[in-house]
Structures are given as structure tokens and as C-alpha cells.
Image (cartoon, rainbow, N blue to C red; front, side, top):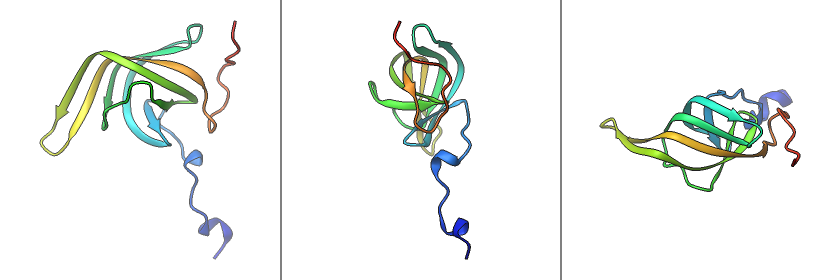
Length: 111
């Protein structure tokens, strides 16, 4: 068996959906209409639908950034009869820096 067939595929090497929030390289939420403000280092999502309850002050990954979300104006629990989901509208996240697996989209030098 070749070396490449024995090694598992690294999570960093998988392509990511640019509309999803990730936690430890696992997709946990689908975002809509992100407004990215690089000067203020924040992202405001108009709507976020999550399979898990997003923790306040917890670090997530979005695209090539590490972000920390601070809450939403409107929060709903959604039930489809099989399981529960969570909806946030809007959700504000602070950009902490570039993720280890992502490229450098912008410098985070303090002004």
C-alpha cells in the first residue's frame, strides 16, 4: 500500500465552505450575508443557522480568520421534529487573526 493511501486526509487540506463557521475544523454553522469590516476587525452576519448553541467568547474559524462571536440581537431555537438547531440574527464576531490553516487575507497590525 502506498504511503498516501495509509495517511488520513488532514482537516486543513479539505476544502472549506466559505459560508460556514467551523470549530476545530468541523462545520457547525451556515452564515448568510457577512459584512466584513477590516478596519474595525469584525464581521456581522445577517443570519447564522447552527447545529449547536454557539458559545459567547468562544473562538471559531470563518474563511481564513479566527473569530470570537459576542451574541446576537435575536436568537431562536429551531426544531424540525428530529433535532434542534439555533438561529442567530444578526451575529457579530470579532476578527482575532488569521487561522493557522488559512492564508493571510489581511495584516492585523494595530494602527
